[in-house]
Image (cartoon, rainbow, N blue to C red; front, side, top):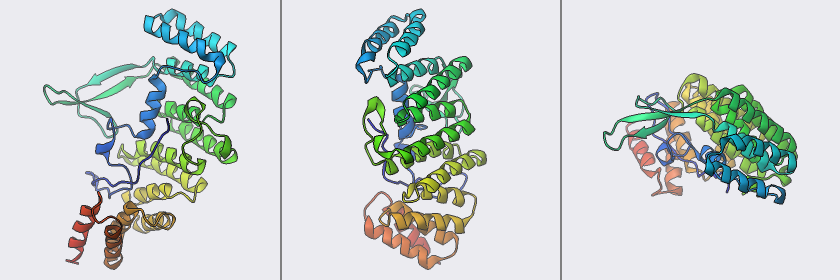
Length: 332
């Protein structure tokens, strides 16, 4: 299983007046708050463990039995024994960390969800609410400590680095989240050929494609919150991507979205142009360039970008956006 980031998409502008973005549309994300990254990390958190090394398989089996039996008083001693007797097994640390992470209590509130919340709808009444988690601070602290140990013992496992960053994200500790992502990137750039994913499987893509896609998903979490402070966090992650992976376009598209949000049209255009240079056939990037050009009153360039987008995908998912924009430009 791998974290797959789909082709760039565009979303309708929000109440904040955001431009279309080279992101997956919100309606395609299940549940609404979770992108591909969180969806798989949630699987990592809740899935039954299956040890990737022989020495841990019996422990994994016994753990599943104890969970099924709700034998809480026996689980922690088993996890400790697993780590001691199978020190070469990454799943001993992953399962232990997930156990403590899952001590959080879930609560459901029937209030208007804020941007970035997990939304739920009562099928009977149609009322919309949100899901939140009450953090178990000692449990979260122990979960973080275990994954910190695991990144030292098993640095080739990008799933562990991503899990640690996710724990920091869930606890609202952006500084440590960003620090973890930077360490992950540094290690990945030095050891691109030996990196692993879930259960020790190889990455599904080359490291210089796989890693920036993960950074994009972390940034998307903050972008969806739609406030100035979290937008800055989004930009910091996109900057990490563009600095360390300058040949991948996604970081530049994210940066362009940030600059557009704050009305820095020239900087937005420059970032989109870099993304376009790296991937000339990205329709999402062409649409973005069309919008930015229109904002800058460069209507000739805007028409060209929209027309180029339609040539590439005359009936694609963004074709209607491009046609509507061209109709409006005729009046300019």
